[in-house]
Image (cartoon, rainbow over all chains, first blue to last red):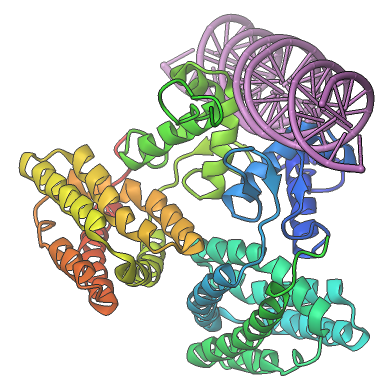
Length: 232
Length: 232
DNA sequence: TTTCGCGCAATGTGATCACAATTGACGCGG
DNA sequence: CCGCGTCAATTGTGATCACATTGCGCGAAA
């Protein structure tokens, strides 16, 4: 016997604070916690049906990843506000890191990865067709990180992860402002092709182009939003 | 009375978990917690004379910043090991971000900044002269982040912060292997001059050159270290 | 002397309580 | 009707306790 048969399943139940983290992360990315909104440990805990303890852990992590901000006077928590300045920096950083990750993933691509990417891309198209924002964002995230994870570059990967977490709320604004039109320009197919060919440079180009489209859409949306007062 | 005169100073006593964070951060950067060494919440708490609670918070933050790692099976904490792979990624990321920060800081430079930089640079030289590693690293960190903070680019700045936190332990290895020789090539003066001239491109070049020197020294040191078994 | 097994110590995690600071609302006085 | 002070509720923070799991060491058996 190798170890001791773990009942029937092998998955060791994720810790509570990890589930809370995942929940908050999802809530932030999908915009269920709108930018600028203040949150509190106890209210989140009550909402999730747990004690404030694991929420504290999850929140610390999200603050460190800049997915949440903490008022230095108040010590009160809030979702970061969307500013053109932040978006510009995020765009720049993504433009460095993500093509690099794609380039590193290219030599390691295999048929399993290609198949998974095609499935994810199909999911994206399906979501776009019916205008399902949540599914689109989930599938798009899955597509990109299927590639990035393949790079094996843990340090850069974690940077990309943090950047996506900060970008998430912006995407919601895009859809709120202009729907999903214009996002179907398919650099994803080019990325898949490049990976199939193990062509690092082409993969990097495809990802860079894909980012450029999305980030430009966000920039336009934020510029438009910034002129209005906060809507509540 | 405008508010209520806060005794004499204005600094509202940093929270315990922030002090613990600072302490751990310093311990990691200066190598007092050697790479690969396991740590525990309770032992750290006892060592710092506080309850495990603020240590948990600080550790969560450091884990999120990748300055500490957590074994997914054990759930046990340890300082990340130094690998050539990690160093390569850190070098790449620093090479993107830090020159950019310097470039953004250049237009905003003023005489106060220049003076502070000259003081920090003098501190570096003094530390190098007497071979004081801790002081050198502290002064070098201060020098760079005096510049970077001036950029006003919060997002990029936090990325740079995380990268330095991960680089810290490597630097200790450098000094342990080869002392401080070869690090006195003075790109810092060039950086100061560039900032005085508000020359963004020159500032970026100076910082990039400075990084290249240091990172190459680390690469050589790690390569040398990697061939030996862990020394305890 | 070596090896296996049992039990204790230590670990991370989560809950609950206590406390100081801040917020927000209610009510009183103008 | 408006302004302001007071008080209660809510906030983040830290400590302490309880618990399941893991690691390690001591001791017994061959």
